[in-house]
Image 1 (tube, rainbow, N blue to C red):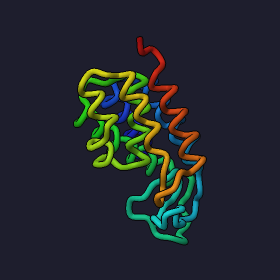
Image 2: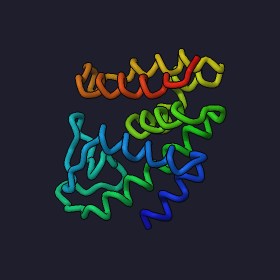
Image 3: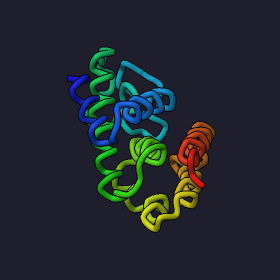
Image 4: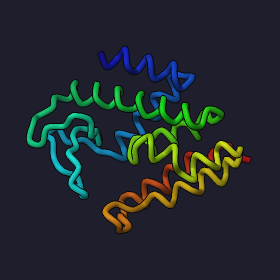
Length: 158
């Protein structure tokens, strides 16, 4: 199941290398916990930051975690492409990582998406930095993640 989702993700993103970069990026930022838990704001979470149908305290195998990551990455990248259809490459990978973390709806309403749709790639990439809070406070890990996503996003931007 994971391989089929990875292939679908590659198709949506335009290349297997972009899909692989997104999965590696997400794994690096999200880490992995095989037992469902509540994140810092109380949202049930499992595996690599997945919040879909999570049971707190349940054990998820490595294979389940990988399949969940691939499935949710596909969902979030599809949402990114729906609301910002002109981005590709590093901007799509970075936006996919952002949407995976904040949700597709929040991404679509964001300044990031508005600037991308206005063809302001640099402005869209810079707007990632505003998404560094959880529970109303700046979180150091989110600030580092947004800096990393911004740096990836800016690669190749003139």
